[in-house]
Length: 449
Image 1 (cartoon, rainbow, N blue to C red):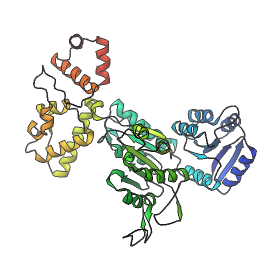
Image 2: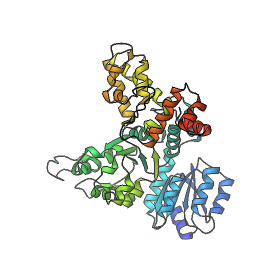
Image 3: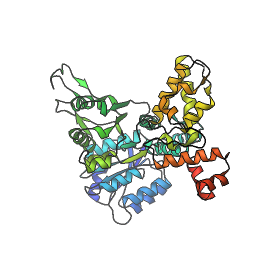
Image 4: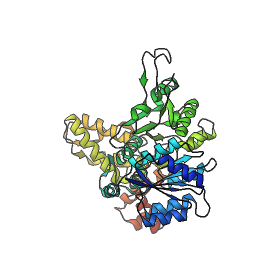
């Protein structure tokens, strides 16, 4: 039987919550302050804490921080009044499972607590995921071992046991759907559906029906009832890719769904509970869209409770590039019955000097084309796209920088080629670049050169 601790300074609210949860197979204890809650927690083990945020003395956020540091296996659900939603969002970032707004809907409280107890990840499972971070290849289908990617993997583990909405940011082609899939696979929902929706590919009218479903006769050609992606996801994960392209009316409808955790099929008045965990992604700057009036501010705060930033390929270092190239060669060898062993020296130089504006997706397409078209056991220069060959330096004394490169791209390329020109002599390279030796060491480490 699970054990729950209710922390609420208002006596009537404590009693109401206790009665609402009595139907669950749980043992319930009550605390009227955060300080008293910590005494309960030190005396016996609990599975879940349901806590108010605003309380005299130690508040709910401080209690959460104590629980996360001392009892990391305990799930925490926060309760918040209107006007303190910002604190609730902070609580989600600190590791809370979910938050519920006051005045409380006791049915929703009961459902959220039930979901949380069913979603509890054991400490053993958490340890297993953490151990996987030491893999030299990657993590849950994501390829890369750079420090930038390890931060992504650590974030995935941290958010996996929460039902908080996650916003994945990154340039096109960085692998946002792969990160969403990894979050799903690391979560207690791993054996339930993972349902992706690419918002930019659907018109507004189609998108509403695609997400919510429709009933017969809801619109022209609606000949039968149809379930939408929310129903298909069930109590799994729904992934909305490119939410920056959502039209404003659809943003409003999704905001209501996230606030009330219910939805309706198009043409129906019957409400259905939202059970799926929502993960969103975008390559757009949503803050800029909010300023321009193209993205609702209230919806932005709802979908960006927790954010994960995926680094572009150019910032991941040569070690990740090497891992990805080897991975894609093996993948497309298997799919096309080829036996390509690697790159020749010229092709390797070209690929490692290229800035990869299309990121991992562009690299995958380049390697697939090269493997399919190769007639030998290595990929040569002529199998690479013209833009990659044109981007190559004309000689070791010339650095060509394509228009659109960032200053970081240029600096990395300048340091890399200068080091190559002096056979890796950092003292000489620092003198040529006009920077201190310590600065060069730091830059070389940052760019993993």
